[in-house]
Image (cartoon, rainbow, N blue to C red; front, side):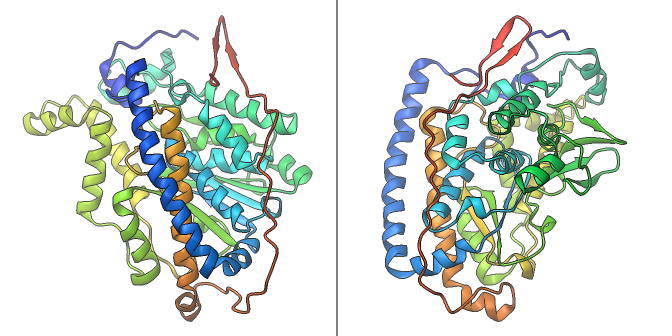
Length: 441
C-alpha cells in the first residue's frame, strides 16, 4: 500500500482543522494553562452538585442506578472522553459495571461500548484516550482505490484512510482483555455473557444496520467498530456480506431505540454547552422536539468554521465556483449534525438520558492537549450529576406520564462502588511496515 503525505489543503482542513493540525510547545502550554483554569472551576461546581445530591437525593440515586443493566452511547468523535466522566459519576452514585449485561453504541460510542463490554473500566479507558493521538487514527493513506472512491469529489486529489489503523488499534485493545484481537459478537456473548449492539449505516441501501450476535454472530467486534466509525470522505467503507458499511451516526446518532425500553436502560448523549439547558428542559419538562432550523444552521457553521473551511464555502456560495468538493463535505456534515441535533421525544426515553456536555469542543478537534481531555472528562462528570438530579426531581411526572416504572418505595442500600483502579495496563503500539505508529506517548 503506497502512502504519501497530502499536500492538499482541503484534506488537511477536513482532518485536522487549521487550528489543530500542528501544535507548537508554546501553544500546547498555553492551551493546557487555559484548560487547567477552567478545570478548577468545573471541579468547584462538581463539589456543589455532590453536596446537593448528598443531602437530598443520594438514596434515590443509588436505587435508580443499581437497577441499570443496559448502557447506550451516542456518537461524538473525540468528545467521547466525556462519556468516561459521566460514567464515573454514575459509578460513584451506585452503578455497578459488573451488573451491566448489554451495551450499545454508534461511532465513537461504539468504541466505548465495545471496550466496556470486554472488561475495561472507565479509568483504564481514560488512560487509553489520554495518551491517544486521535489524528493518527485518521492519518491519510493514499491508494488507487481511495482515489477512485473519491471520484465524486470532481476528480480532486482527495485520499481516504483505509481504516486499518483504527481496526488494529481496537483489536489490540480487545486482545489486552480477552487474548483475542478477532473476538466476535458470539464469542463475547458465549464466553463473557455480554450483549453488544453496534450501529452502522449501509451506504448501498441507506438503512440502519444493527451489528450484534443475533444478526452477525461471526463478525469481529473490532471490524464492527471500524465500520460504525467510518466517516464518509475520510474512511473507506467496510465491505461485509452484501453491504458497504459507514458511520452509523448518519442515520442514528443516539441509538436508544435499539434496546428494549425499560427503566433499567441508561443512555449517554453528547451535547454542546449552548444547547444543554434547552435540551434538558425539552426532554423532561416540555416534551418537545429539540431542533429547529436556526439551531441546526448555527451548529453546522460552527463545526465547518472549526474545520477551517467555512470561509471557503462562503466564497463558493457567493461566487458559485464549487467543483464538488465542498458541497460534498457540507452534505456529509449536515447529514451527521442533523441527526446529532435531532432527538424525537418519545414516551419511552424520558428519564433515561444522561446529557454529556462537550463545552467549546468539536468532534473534529483531533489535537487535544492532556488538560483539554481532562476538561472533557470533568464536563462529563458535572453534566451527569446535573442530569441525574433532574431525573430524580422529575420522577413523579415521569411516572404519571407512564414513561418509566421507577420504584417509589426506595429502600436503603449500600453503595457498591465499582473499583476503577488499574496498576499495570500495557497499551498497544501499532507497527506498520518500517515505521512505528505509537498512539500512546
